Image 1 (cartoon, rainbow, N blue to C red):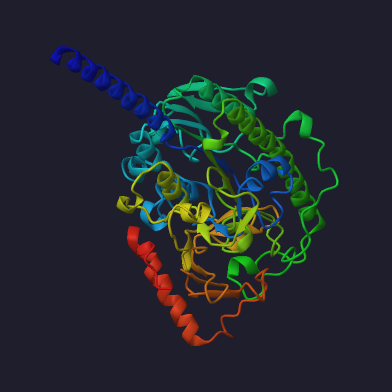
Image 2 (cartoon, rainbow, N blue to C red):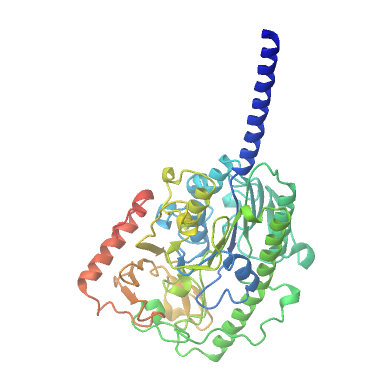
Length: 509
């Protein structure tokens, strides 16, 4: 009798073991971390209608999830902003000041410092399969920055543009090997090429592990080369004429007071043409989003994928009579689009909580299951705003925007009256930047919809704007504001300019 009983017990144990193994496998499948896609455009504004051409993007990401109405960059210039997105740090902590090697853009100091703690490394540790395609940092691939053979840590597939944005006739670092491209649309158009390679990556990936894709198309950055099928689009479109367009920079920092006003007709024609071409390049980005979402749907990963769509900085075309560029402290240059869809996010939401680009890596790593409280990053996760059921979260009461001006010591030979120390000058001697265009701002939404900025110049110039009463920032109210409020904002600014990690988040309300 003992023998059969032991046999039955053995069969029971075997069945139990099989049940446990089956459950474990199924649980493992169900607990696989969500996939993540980050689409980072180049110089896409939100204030001047930059999302207007992106109808499919707004429908497939924004309408399917959240549109943030108060998303900002920590600094309005390509390389420092992208360095903030990668590192989760304010510029005063990652030390990338501008787009040059001497300004730390993709420098050895960046590579051995902040880049070694960038968010893709943490994703890789969580067994994410990672893909990068498009523009990286402006000096990436240069000889002084390690050349094309240098691949930043954390990336499994690497297809990065050497240098600044181009659409044709560029060199790509394809997993550390130089790949020279020409001007054939089907083979070389960069926006399409990085999309196609990301789709191939999805076909080749292991379904057992989550993936992260970062696509950084050149659009709508200059040289504004549209795909052939879109070169005649928006023929009647002109830059918006409302707000601060073609207005004098009265009461502002000297750099804003120097443009001619009203602008010459030739300048307006030039910026109208640039505005139109920018929109044309975005139509290929819209196609990119559509094809990527369709692919995710086809491989049955769309419902388990968070998709972020944003830009490194805003842009201006004629605001305060400045022709075209970024770099300034005003809303048109520091506000960026931010659309997010993904698991647990309710559709057709507009959130007013302020978010800055240093929050992106914290949010991405939060989704990936990293304990973000242990990270030495300045940002904070906005996952609680995206998925309120996840846990309680608080939005920040105020934040920092900072910029280090760039200039050239030799005087521009065409504009000798301006003297040395300027940069990005146009033929009519209107300059977009200068050494002393160095500023730091506190932007607050709680209690006051206010911006307070201090310049590092010999005037110790201060600009203050009430964005509720003056959304276009036409009047600097520094001489009208209660001195006690100015002191409060100054103290907040001092604290933010020296913050690091947790102290950038632990702010008094």
